[in-house]
Image 1 (cartoon, one colour):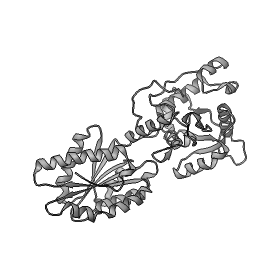
Image 2 (cartoon, one colour):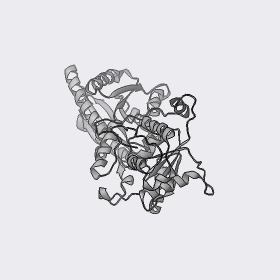
Image 3 (cartoon, rainbow, N blue to C red):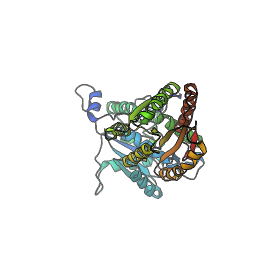
Image 4 (cartoon, rainbow, N blue to C red):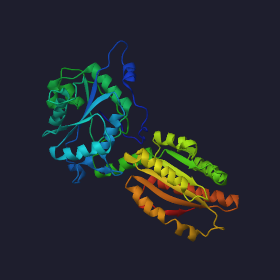
Length: 390
């Protein structure tokens, strides 16, 4: 797949998968869509990156790069099988990644001495002629770099339709079927260039890891779920904070839900894969709402793929309770946050001073919005368990 022209384009957020029926609808009237598989050559050593770990296994937000690529391919449910081609010494590591991040439809093949031989081995694995092999021979195979994690499903579909129309020959394998110029030079078959999206770039150098991390952080920071209780004592502050967040974060979708009726609101946000939660706690029940939310997040296993940020908010009347006294009583949150960090849940606490003066409250809420934005966008593990004040 050829990358498009460089540009500052955020990759699309994971959305609905394209089903086989939708794939059929994209074809020419009266034509039958082919069966599709993918081969990911992942036998490189990352020499240009200058690190000991092969770049496809380098962590981004504590998760190997290749896992993001697999996740992008898995969104296209019409891709029947995915074969990852890795060296013998990395087979165990790859199997662990598949198990840990619950990747589906993924098989392994052993890498060859060159990239083209590795692709050939992946294609042979798809023939399904080995004893015990459950793979079936596809009609179209997508060859995709294991270190291009930001692919668009529409582009994949265009590639499949172009491959079905133009085809390729076995003879061209030795000259690199993934290269358009060589295909044109050495094949008797037509070839077609499909323009990719601007973010279909390859992680090659160490700085590219930082760029990829920034893109992923931005992508999963576009929605915030504001969790409120149903008690009137915090309802006013909660709605005011919601309005401030919407005003200060105009490019972020702010959703709100209540801890009531079996927590259906919150379950809906978790099911929709929202990775950012601002939980407002009632003043009389110390962080009961946050503890409910954290249990729901742990039970859901939402944090397997991306770190989930939880900002626990408490409105504090500093005239009634000294700030130092309240901070001292909340030291237990730090230990809880350390435990949750191991589950990829990043918890921090934000105290918002609740003065009687409405203008001062607005100022404090704006400061709170700035802090919440930083916690969500940075996703800094070093801030886990911090007790912050606005």
